[in-house]
Length: 254
Image 1 (tube, rainbow, N blue to C red):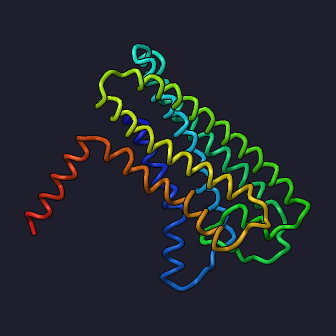
Image 2: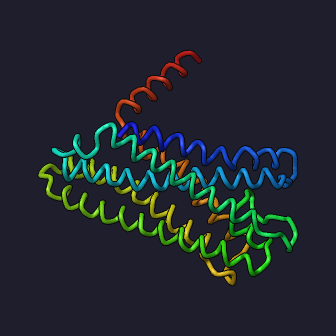
Image 3: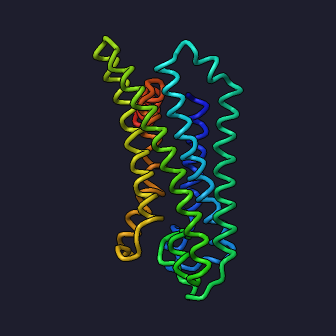
């Protein structure tokens, strides 16, 4: 569990770092300029971290399923080597996804200016700058990516259905409450992640507006990485005790 949480923390940090520092710098210097290479790099890093994170969340749902539904087989199904292989697969999936979309997006010719109407370089906004014919090639990749994301979401839902069935058989009410309080926030974050991401990349142009695009982009790009530490870390009693001790030491020194 802690091995996957370590990977998730690194991916959350990478997702935020890919877009927030540049946005803050632009705000401080009152500018919206980003270089062509910088835009391509930002898009690649963002897609890399966010795709790998979603793959890791899918793996973590399987980890929870095995831990709750097949605890006696956990050491066999999810040994240290298997965990390393699954985490490596998540990172590799993110890298290949980012490489494919970035290379395809920036191979298209610009013909509608160079102003991206968003606070970071995002595929739907970049596609608005390209000609109509090559546009369909990237749109096809987005549809395939959305279908794969939806398949992962179905896998997560099925895993949690099995988990909830096992939890409901727990005789202790306290045990059931603890399991539900841990699973439901994670499922809510995944739902927000998938729904806003699919809406961003597959919504029809007729309902697009700058304010709506901004809100939806923030929801899927910044909210899950910010909420994940609260969901996973604050559920751990040792971390809460260490945080309380740290805060107490700070107040005593003051």
